[in-house]
Image (tube, rainbow, N blue to C red; front, side, top):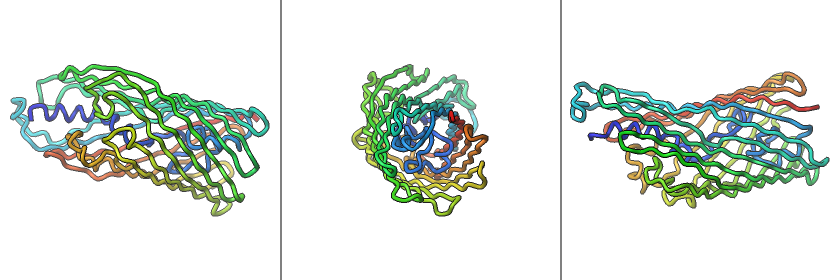
Length: 377
């Protein structure tokens, strides 16, 4: 048990790593977030470059959009054992709280290329976070643990309206994977970066004025990163594979000022690592247009654990059930003028605390999104 608490802190520094390995739970756009990310059949702003590039075809005018996201992963580790057995320090450690966090961007631009074709480009993050812990409570031993990891996406998209009711969109993503971990007590200190490439295709069909349907396929990507045997995620030691995903979605105007949207997607993570299995995600969201300027949003989505049961020992510091996440989202958007609008949303996860080898872990995710967009009329 000599390094038990140290390894628990390594877990905290690697929380972001585990999160990114899960799925696309960090996604752009306050309005889309408010919809519970059930946005593939709506996709009526510049975040369409992620959710469904086909939605760009129905967007008029040149426009720009910028977002700021704040992600916080607070982890509470509660344990009951005498530190003196390991460090010669009397007393019982009862509870410690650690956090990893990050501010990640989105920026996008689109314009009409021809009367029925739109071209767009953007930069956004699909996973990001980091943490730093120095020292150990009630211990004279000095430790420094620092971790950071991100998936930065550079996108260019093209969308064409085939008919008034049907559009097709294509996207190309350059995905930059960055990974850093420092644990001075264990001699771990690395910083690596590499690129992979992904193709996206989106379809949008509007059979009636009230109903919109969508299909999106992302090819996935292989990123050949430098070998790192000390990686905090065993699946990322020699390579990173980004999952192939598909998604079906629809949006329906139940009333003149109320829209309901839903989507189902599958992340084909089994080909990215033998440790992972494929997972399904479910999303639902609503928009209530309270006034001509103000819209309110409420949504929900799931994000299940993707690590196979037989590989639980690989991640022996935790009970993986804590990563079966469910998220509730709230949001609002305000239209200042015909050109300028801003959005804000908040997402919180719900998961059950788990106990492993005398330590109880409680892992939550809080995600705030703020964006502002402008159309050149």
